[in-house]
Structure formats: C-alpha cells, structure tokens
Length: 412
Image (cartoon, rainbow, N blue to C red):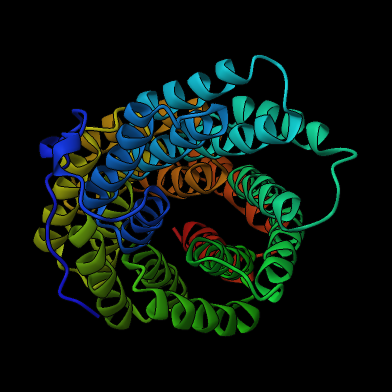
C-alpha cells in the first residue's frame, strides 16, 4: 500500500481548471483518471481531473447533456466523500434539473446517489423517497450493466436505511441483492475500475450487516473478501471501514487490545484521505476500546479528537455516538451531572436521525448512569429498551451485554 498522506479539505481548489494546463490526455482518459483518484482517496487530484475534462469539453463545444449530467453526478459523489452534504445535494439537484423530468434511467442514477447522500447524512425519510422514486423509474428498463449498476446502488441505499432502522435481516437481504447485481456487472468481462470498487463496497456492506446481526461467522469471511478486493484497488476509504468493522467485532468479543490495533490501522487510512466521517467513527471506537481497558485519559483524547473531526459536518450520527462516549467517560470518573448533559445531547441527536445503533448505545449508557446515580427503576427501563432492540436484531453479543448489566443491577 502507498504511504497515506493527509489532505487538507479546506485547501481543495474548486475553481475552474485553466485549459492551457491540459496535457495530451483525452477527456475520457481524464474522466478515468478522476475515478482512479476517487477510489484511492486522492480527492483533490480527482477533482482536478474531472474539472479539466469538463472544461475542455465545454470550451470545445463538445459538452452535451450526458456530459453535463455526468459532471453533476461525479462532483456530487466527490463532495459526499468530503462530507460536504449540502454541496453534494446541490449538484444532484442540478443534474436532475438538467434532465427536466425526462430520461428516466439517468434520473434514477442521480436519485440513487441522492439517496446515498441523504442516508449517509442520517436523513432516512428523504433517502427512502429517493430510493422509491429511483426504483420506479427503472421499471421497464432493459436488463444489462447500465441498469444493474443503478439498481445496485439503490439496493445499497436500501440496506443502509434498514441498518439505520435496526432491521438486520432486511438489510442483509438488500445488500445481498446489491452484491448479486454487482457480481453480474463484474462477470460481463468489461467492468471498469469503478465497477470493481462498487463490487468491493457491496461485499463489505453484506459483511457489515452480518456483523450488525451478530453473525460473525458469516461476517468475517466476507470482510476478508472485501479486504482483499480493496487492497487490490488501494482503496484506503474502504480499508478504513473494514478495520472499523473488525474492531467492533473484537470489542463485542471482549478483545479490546486487538480491537485497538484494528481501529488504529483503520485510522491511518482514514487520516490519509482526511474523511471526517470515518475518522470520527474510528476515533470514537478507539475511545470506547480504551474505556474497556480502563485507560480513561487516552479515551478522553480520542473522544475529543472525534468531536473535532465532526465539527465540519455539523449535527450527525457520529456526533451522537461521541456524546455517548463522553457520557460513559464522565460516569466512570464519577462526574454524573456532566455525563447526564452529554447523554441529553446524544438523545436529541438519536431522535433526530432515528439511528438504531445510536439508540442502543444511548439506552445502555442511560441505564448505567441511572444505576450509578441510585435509580434502579430508571436503569431497568433503559436496559429493557436496549434488550428489546438487541432481540429484534438477533445480536446475541449485544443481548449478553445488556443481560450482564441487568444481572448487576439486581445484585445491588
């Protein structure tokens, strides 16, 4: 793997490219170069390649409707990677306005990306609307790689929404459909690098959903497949996510030291591409791991860094989980009132985004805090909520975590 480098998102040049700087590369080659850098996590280089291609087409009079819609799609996808959700939405809306209600397959592609943007930002209701409209537009479209690519992305967003809602079986079903569609694309023999990247994401998503359900026997081999595919692609963003999921599995198995190593390895990749969302997730995971190891000062440092990482995103599911971590830290230090304030912030964000994983973490920490404050009835109610969620998902490791807390409560 190449040595990751830190990229300052605020320093990215968003101005039009000087056409005089254009080299001998064709516009198609520049588009491919942009896709290549996107999968590597070199977002500044990706942006410059896209801008150069689009500017050359515009100045030469070759920029047709397809090119303008494609430009909107690619730049929106890039802004999504940078955590610039408003700008990503704007580019998708720009592309849809260009189509002006026509070209249903092209609109379905933009709606799939728009749904991904909304689901990534935690806006599940909007994302569901985009997916439903996109799938409707694909009705009657001929089978083939073009349709499979778009439906594969739509099914991916479906899986994201089911995971966020705590519906593990439905998420696994959606992600399996997405993987199967990308399998078809790759099997055609003319798959692009972007296709192989999307296929690796589909493998990872299916692994992640299996882990979410506590089926680690299914998740770990799929993670290995995703890791192999992403290593071949040099996909640092994807590798960061694989390491994060492995770390979560190891934490559930009470293997905190091994979890630290996985999360730290993932953080190297995440910092290398400067993706604020995955950086925050890994730093939060490192915070929880160090709490498990009774290293409270180290935990505090990671939670504080995670806070800084999500500042550019604003209110987000990541911010909610950081608040739960800070509440746990303060409770462990006996600072119960400060812990309560952090949990109130987490509760407001959890209700706003409707994320089931956050709600579970919130309920468990609320129960622990209530128990520490001598309020066993409140603690029991919170643990009951967490237990109901873990039973619905079918995650036996999470059920054991809650039952252990309930057992400790009954002993006091």
